[in-house]
Image (cartoon, rainbow, N blue to C red):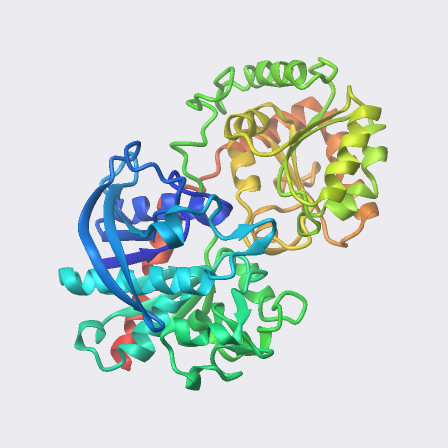
Length: 488
């Protein structure tokens, strides 16, 4: 089938979170299954035209944006290592001159509704002018949600889209795309769409509702998260709407791009290893301990954490037991950035326990890969986690996850039972420092039993969470959306 895949960030072109990893890998896997797929995203300032060998394929495309006419260029490139075509919506004012993708100093760009309405409108204008009719449009998150409303509302009678089905994926419902209602006209949709049943949300415009209201099928990045978003606790005020569409909401766990994440071939790690030979993993551990200023000792359990330093990721409950953890004859290496209060706390504790805590504020892709390869355990104490890639990557690297039972973590990690060998990690359910500490203590206890630990490592390294598996599930989802469209 012909698939239009719309995502506002795609690895390796632009990334702020997990959406980019999905959007860089899933289209390649779908193409490998024989489908024709085209990816669309804005051409941000950080997308280097020369580096990615982009070329203009449609100059001076005129788009109506509110009362203004805006000119864009459409650039074409390829996802590296594939023949998947990527099209960039290029406008210097709205995209090319901004240092960040969506926010500055923690706040949305005020003209984000204009920016992403332009992105969605230009995407459809381009395919209409080229005559490329997709069987299916797959839009991701609030930035691309208007695509679906434009097809279902503005183009309801347009024969170009009469057989086009739509899928809306939500990667984190915490981001609703909320803006003042005065921005409604720039979307190009009428005020009849600004109602609680449609795009209005407590007297604001919620762009994500364009996808939730109008998509043929909705999906999230894990089965448990698909259920969680239909509850008041995780629905962010949209749980009623989502419950009304419960029969059209599905969950598919993300895959891992093993071309990038494989300790047998990873160019960013010091020593390659595999399930057949785990010994070199210890070389990575000792190297990282030395580089991070930790005590160099292969017998001290090393816990890795690469994350946003925020409440959602469990930093509040980690803070409540961190000193106890550092007294447990364990080490913790942290990579990430986020809320200033956690920067301060972790910086102070690193000074107090320099041989047990290593802190790296910011993001470093090479260091992230070394943390997966070197660590014995990987910590994800999240308040909520739509899917989580960390635990899936850690499996491949023989690094055992310690997680809270929520979202995709609940779907992929089960508590390990040393008597039966069932399970693959260390899981706690209550969101508290005490419950987290119990899970960590259990992991440290099993770590000391080397034969059991090695068998657990070998077990998780054999898992297949490749995108080839997930892509087949997406194809089935697309077929469901197409069936619904045909019935209409």
